[in-house]
Amino acid sequence: MDRGSRKSPERVFPRQLVFIVPPHIQKEIIRNGTAAEREAMLHQLSVSEMLRGGRQAFAGPAAAVPAGRRRRAVYDAGGSEQLPGLLVREEGGRASRNRAVNEAYSASGRMYDFMAKVYGRSSIDGRGMRLDASVHFGVRYDNAFWNGSQMVYGDGDGMVFNRFTRAIDVVGHELTHGITQNEAGLQYRDQPGALNESFSDVFGSLLKQWVKKQTAAQADWIIGEGLFTRRIKAAGLRSMKAPGTAYDDPLIGRDPQPAHMKDYYRGADDNGGVHINSGIPNHAFYLAAVAIGGNAWEKAGRVWYVALCDRLRRGSSFADTARITVAVAGELFGRGGKAQAAVQSAWKQVGVAG
Image (cartoon, rainbow, N blue to C red):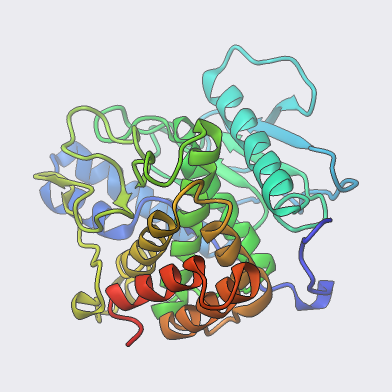
């Protein structure tokens, strides 16, 4: 059964432009980098602002197809900052000689299959939306983003970041923003924004675990493994297992994510710390998944999926999410059972629930 979006078209929430690399890393590079590194990052930030302001060309809405049928399209931006670029591979087409093209195509297909086979969802909108992606965006562009209708990948500069198509959890993360856009519509600031980021990390990690056939205990719970070059002292962008430990490097700084509400970031940067405070619900999910055991996408993932699609709203808080996921775990897997107890304990351990 397709448990796709239940929202009527008029209730679909506004599109959001969301990036995988958090602004605090970009600011550290500007502060600590060489003149060339600072100049490159300042240019990339100006591109991001132009994108946010709608002053760049975006791809049109991706077409819907019959439920159960994958439809993908990969474009080559050719180093430009215009989207979508030249169409280079469509569904069923021959593999490209270009590695980024093939990685983007493959990862989109795996995300489609993961959502369909595990949660009965037809693409990210629940109605068979075509998954579009543009590769080679900008020159040595150090980011990837969801622009409200498609995925966009930079190649990385080769000094700090590798190409962004190489990490399947990054693809899953950004495409999950499309699911959130069509479902709960969590507003992108403060606690709802941190939840928006956290749900993307959750399903990005679950996609990687599903592809690798890893249990919760076997998974590394790192988001963006392999994105940083060997020059950088980093396991990845974030750690759901141990928030605050993903990186510690003279150029990009130290991972600021908290794992507990006592360390909650209360500043105004990053829309109220959406990439920082997401560490708290991230860690709650990790704790719940490991306590439940087995494949994290089967029980913990289903609880979070139902909460995102059916229960949460634009302004939902951490406390709302704790209450809702505990209730959903009881409804799905038995009140007072192992899954519900694990979810309840997880939120308590991160200081959200009493």
